Length: 478
Picture 1 (spheres, rainbow, N blue to C red):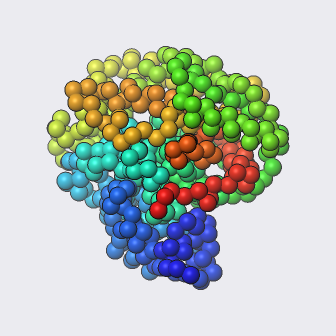
Picture 2: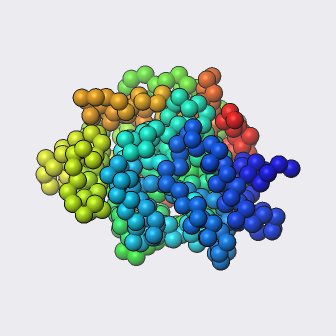
Picture 3: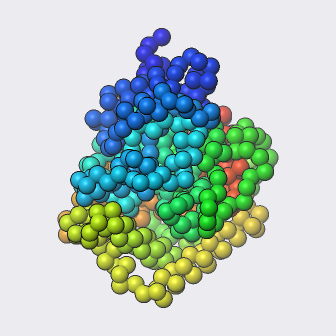
């Protein structure tokens, strides 16, 4: 036997919780083990940007709730996730300097706490969660444990790097255009984006937007169990997804029957898809066929409609403007251009030029896309299989340093993330699974998308794939 830090490093959250429940370790021991791993690994990865170890120790030694993850160490993303009494900076340099302390906890944080998780601090996020890489003026670049010269993805990049490197077994993540699935793909993890309205964003945000919060994890069962714990409607929620017929944990290992699956192995809007991503999706198709499913080429025609990009970006720019307004509210004064990264400032300024009619047109475009896309499933298709990303994890700096072209990173990001934003727009659940690695040893995720409200089916098929092609023993170089 080694140290607790070594012995528990690669256990998933369910296994760590079982150790606590059996009395084999204490919550405090798991907390100290996670702290030890963060202190040993994070200097090179830069995944944990805010630490509240003393608070975590107090929680671990206190009267923890009897939940599914009692005593398991955890990280919150540094984006929108208020935790009463703790600092939140949204990856912004001015907030990093101001260190504003939240006066409330959002509902999701309360649900995390009620599940027994012990939060050690905050994982890194790009400023306002904008880019699919995690590199900021405030905190620097967060690196991929599989190869530190490459990105861990974004915007939940710190979460991905922390879980993939064994700091913690599970971590909070959020997804407005792929930000759970992107780091899951880059870091070799499970990343579920739930259906719109499955996880409450109360009391601060609306479920009608593009984003939703959940986690990245090492195992399908961890994601299923956590979704059971946090899929609780909040007061005044704008969208509430239909409740499941049984717990999501019960779907792990359940037989989905023979499914009809469409495969998308090219870029729907044209261009060349990276060969590693083609290999990944075709390999996954063969895995699914070996499990008895019927896989054939096919995807929603709406994904090949170029007009949806402008509608998505209009809503996205509006979100950046709202973020800058929120920054001003936290600072108690107007935000300065020098306090906001150029890619976000330019979008916020662009949003000011949009009229109410422009925004209404964007909302109508999103609604049209949503209905057209979901119709493909209504016509008898069970799942869509795609690569998660259009390329392997990018080198550090590729979407960051652009000098006089502040919007260039956003434009270039479209080639990196051609498959994920569509399902923020449509509101459907989608999961990235670590089923492929490049010849250079970098993870290449594949994405499965189900009809609205059908996370149950995703957990059934994901657990089939996990059992047939396990990834638990695939770990980054030490």
